[in-house]
Length: 380
Image 1 (tube, rainbow, N blue to C red):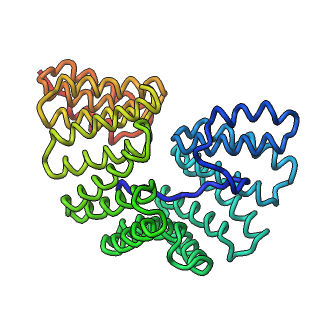
Image 2 (cartoon, rainbow, N blue to C red):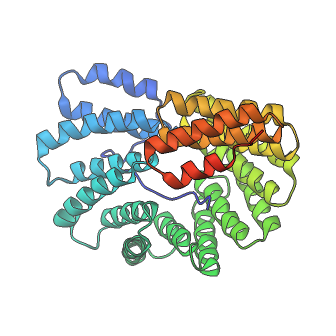
């Protein structure tokens, strides 16, 4: 599913303004001098700023610097240290390293519970983070258990009309989406309505909530309602974000995804190309999200019969995977290049890439994928 998950980072400064410019924060470091704790506050702010822009590598770098200072100064059993463990866990999760994310989120929860007890809003936030990461590694039982604990604490502390409660409903909706779409839709709509009540319509959380409702409608086969929700999200995000923002890319992709499901591949291509353009603007051309987006665009080019452009996109995705030394992605993308050459009737070129894919899967040790790649070879 395309659900936009709801996670919360901590800042030691409750007056933190998410619009704080990175340049201003970096300048602040020069005024911090040798004051390590002041430096840690700025590092944490820089982590938050980079995270909001989707640059998780830089966010992680600054959070780890802040953690080193604070754990050295306060020791491990400290709330500020716990907050940084959570922030680091979220960045590892956003980068795809979910085992590392679980490790840091568990540390954060253990510290916070020992200091604040169970019925604390920050403990709920940490249960929420942990539940999301359990979900990412496929542990549905522990995911739901943690998310239910987060919701229970938040309802008891805030009542229902609060953004953190909406976040809990949203994340539970995601988990229920694996087995009970009606329940998932109920929770997703609850989250959206709360966010609208709290923030008004033009807010990023409302846009994400529309995406989540649309996702469930799509899973249920109601593509018209899904598309309506995604268009609502896109309308909001186009107002509140600059062009190069990951949420905008997700929204473009979601619209393209639904047009594809409805059989309108020309419109699907249009919106997936917009998503690709945003990802390139954010990351440059050598990033896994860009490679994935090139492949999504290639798929639509193939559907409309433009194999030359499809091949160009497939080859760019493969180039990115090879430069990043991602062996499994390189194997997958080699296979897809082979398939595109096959569609074009260029069988010698297709066979070359099927063999490359098989060789890479052999190095990885996946015999089933080796057989699949070799089975595609066209014999003259």
